[in-house]
Length: 248
Image (cartoon, rainbow, N blue to C red; front, side, top):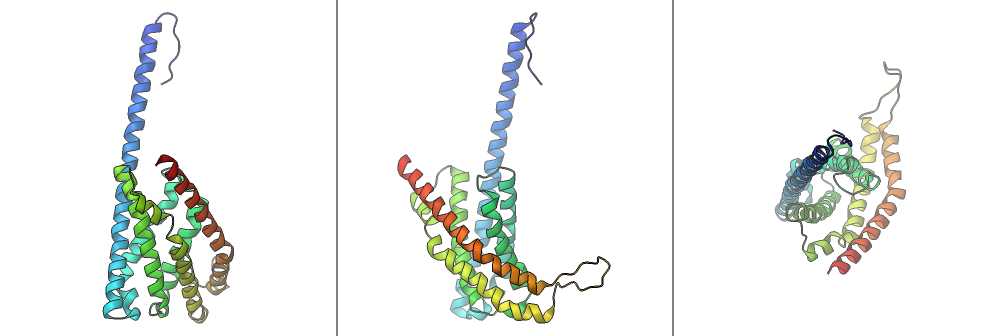
C-alpha cells in the first residue's frame, strides 16, 4: 500500500501512513525474532551433533584405538557436517553477515572429505589421520556453534568464548587442513583403481568424467585456498578483538 497526499482528506491519509508504518515495523520485528529463533535452534542442534562426535571419538580412542574412530562417529559426523550446507544459504539470503566467498570453500572441502573420501572409500577410515581430522573439526565447531548459539539465544557471548572462537584456529585450522589433505592423498590409489564415479565414453550423455583427475584438482585447490582462508581468519580475529576492546 502506497501512501499518497490527498487535498481533501490530509488527516486521514496521514493516519493511514502511520498505521502502515506501524504494521511494517511489527512485521519486521516479527521476522527478526523468527530469524533469531531459527539461528539459535540451528546452532545448538548442530552443536549437539559435534558434541557427540567429540565424545565418541575420545571414548573410542581410549578403549579401541584410532582404527575404530570413524565407525564410532560416522552418523553424527555426517549429520553435523552436512547440516553446514545451510550456512551457505544463510549467507546468500542475508541471515548472517559471513560472505559466501569465505563460507563456500571451507564447507565445500569438508563436505567433500566427509562424503567423497571417507564415505566413498572405506579403505581410508582406519587411518590415524581420521582421528586428527575428527578432533580438529569437532573442537573447532563446538566453539563456533556455542559462540553463535549464545549470541542468537541470549544476545551475549562470554569473553573467553569469543577469544577461543577467534584464536584456536591458529592451531586447529592447520591440523584440520593437513588431515583433509592427508586423507585425500590416502584415498588417491583407491580412487584410481576403483574408478568409482567415473563416466567413460561412449555413453548416452556423451560426457566423460574421471574422478581421479577431479580428486587431483580438488587436492590442488588447497594450495591457494588454505592460505586465503587462514589470512581471512587472521583478519577476522583482529576486527573482532578490536571491536571487543572498544566496547569493554
